[in-house]
Structure formats: structure tokens, C-alpha cells
Length: 356
Image (cartoon, rainbow, N blue to C red; front, side, top):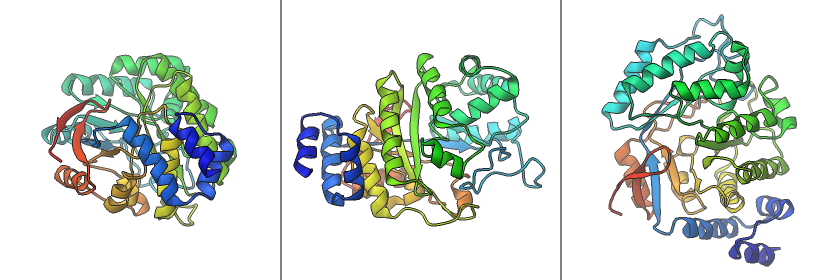
């Protein structure tokens, strides 16, 4: 099996599901890491590791989905439920711009009362005030929710949001793209085909997207493999994924509870992601859930990007995971791992390269 997989990868051929499952369950961690690192070097021969200066603005924590793995959501009647005012949102974006930030990521819950008009008005004003900021916001479940509240189809909803100033779509709400897992951990959220449908429509509208995977909750190794193959197939079918971001479930303060994946399990999934998703150029290491040291190691297991500096992050923090990294720390982290840092845009254009 080892030699067969190695030869396929060296020849640029894709491996099959059985081989992927063997890599995930049985292969030596360092063997998988070396295979993934070889692919990274082939795709990114300059040994540059990128990051973006961004901010997550969680515009509401009110959510009808009530996923068992989420510690962030609140009911509509909860005393600490909120919808941010325009003024608060603009203050947060002002701070992002003052610090040289280029990416705004607005995400919240599946609110039962926020329709397309709310987002059109808000996004138009954001684009008017901050034309240089990439509005990389909402997720497929949020977009489906907005469509349902507004009595619209997904295609019209996306088109109207794009016209109002939505530039690109993050891959949140993917969790595991296998419906048996989704029914267990998030039964009120859209199925995997609906998630894929939003991403197909976004690509049809020439909107860049990203893809994610949250693992370590209730899925089987076979489900992780299936998720990766489904992402690969979506991209091969005309998808617009610029990056893939695997991250680990954080059990703190959640209904689901349990334990998260180990660092070794995380690194194995990063490596497998790089090996399988050779049609997606960038793999992102999750310092938000893993911390700086494991993120550095992930750069030698196939990852080439460290995501955002995140001036603010509330969803993962609600589960008790609150790592923070400033821009200078990010630069040092990349250098210390043996790479050359580069600040990028959402679309992976390097705007500033730093010395190694």
C-alpha cells in the first residue's frame, strides 16, 4: 500500500477512498506528513506561508439551529441574545481598517427575523464606507436561512447579496458533509447537498469561496474521507474554493460534550487534506483551535496558510478555546517554522512579503 500510494502521488494521480482511509487510520503519521509536504512544496516552491489581517464580526448569536456542538448560540428570548447595531458593526470595521485589515468575516446564527433587506442595506453601507475591505461573509446555512425568511430561492438570494456588496463566501456550516453525522450533531441545519448547492451557485456567480471541515465530534474515519472526496468533486465540477480549512471540534460548554481530536489526529487530517485536495491550492492551519506550536508543525504537514490574525473571534471562544495572535506574532511564528511570511488578501494575492 505504501509504495502504491507514493507512486500515485509522485505521478500526480489521485488516490482512492480505500487508500485515503488507510492513510488516515493505519499509515505512520510522519509518512503521511512527508507525502503532504512534498505536494505543498510542489504547489508552493517559494516556501511562503501566508496570512490575512481580518476580523470576525458575529452580528447575532440568536440561532434556530441549536447545534449540539455549539456553545455560542442563544434562543430569541435569552437575556444575552443580541443583534449588533450598525454603529457597533461600523466601529469594529473602523478598528480593522486602522490596523491595516483587508478582510471582514461576518457570521452569526440562523436568526428567524433577519431577511434579505436587512443584509442588503447593511452590506451596501459597508461597501460604501469601506470599499477596500473584502466582505467575506455569511455561510451556506445562513444564506439558506435568509432565503427562507425572505421567501426567495437560493440563486436570487445570492445574486442580491452579491449586488449589495457580498464579495465572497466562507465555508462555515460544513461540519462533516455526511447527512448521518449531520442528523446527529446538527439535525436542524441544512443537509450536505444544500450546502453544496449554495457553493455551486456562488461559483456560477463567480464568487470565491472556501471550504471547511469540523472533525472530532461523532463522525467515523470513513466520514472524514467522504467529506474530503465531496469537496474535491465539488471543486472538480467548477467550484470556486480558494482554500480548505480543517479544524477540530471544541467540546467546552457544549451540549454534545466529549473530547476533541488529539494533535496527532489533527496533523494526520491536515496531511490527508493536502494529499486528496490537490485541486485546491491552499490548506489552512487552524491556530485558533490548535495554538501556535501545532499550527507551526502543520506547516510541515501540508498547510501553507495560517488564516487570519482575527482581531475578534467569539464562536470558538465560547467553547473555551481563545488563542490570540497579533500580526507581529504571526510573522515571527512563520519565520520560526522555517518559512517566509507574506500578508495576503482574501483571494491569496500577496500584498506584502517579509524577510525570512
